[in-house]
Length: 365
Image 1 (spheres, rainbow, N blue to C red):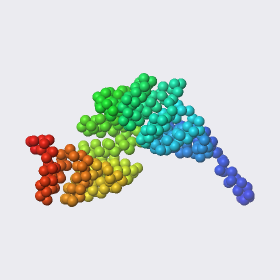
Image 2: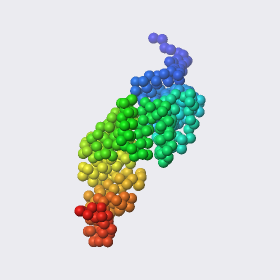
Image 3: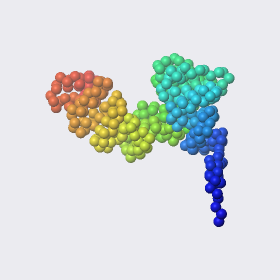
Image 4: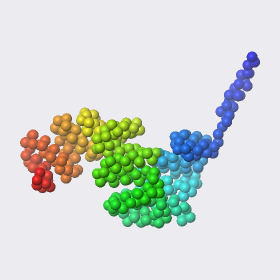
């Protein structure tokens, strides 16, 4: 059998790198096919391949920015969208998405200083930017500007779920008008039954009203219809714990831990679940992990105090519960617990100071 000369073999192998090479535009086309199928991870790979070949491919930048926005990577979305904008992509194509990326990161000044879209831009794009401006104004305490922006958005597109969701946010937080906030959310779901932010907010409203079963169902809808469901799942975990659906709650926590094992909210949720199960040592560990990241989380402070109470660690319990009562002096239950602890040490003046608001609040106690 004849052998291929070494020099020919080298040439053939050297040419393999270019064999069947794909252009950056072809990568973008393939990414769009994956996006249409909902295969987001594969789409991301194709878009990154396109940008590796041509860092100035504006369509790849734009699509990757939207992809990051959809999956909750807000810093990544901001980076790609700003780069696409710098490369010449129109305001109409960029600003609705860049405004949401800023908003999700709490960059309210950046939202409010974005240029206004021209009247020639689509009504949907204009309404989207106005909605983000309205929510940003609300977060900065400017309710009048928030109402004006949301009103302008809805005059442009009264069927836009994002604008109706924004109206619900302003109504509930700015105006305390929960009834009409619900109507706005229901209207948003009429136009898009799978609109996750509306389901998530309904879950919050149901939880506030004490309708835990309905809240759990709403958060489940939000999870099912979102590509970045961390917040919705964390909320559902807490609801399930309160409903004593402990196994289901643990399943949610296990999923959350895979993506964010050090997140304070995840560790608080695990601590609450362990507390309800009576596993106080594990609860203590989880609450301490949460406070090691942020020692100002008063839910963790409270339950760590209650956990030490259950473990009969009187000094630690008193320390954490006292810290909590300084922030929430009207919590009568915690006052009673602290008073009973002081009773054992015969600190009667402290007991009277702690228990007097309880008596004043309820003479029958």
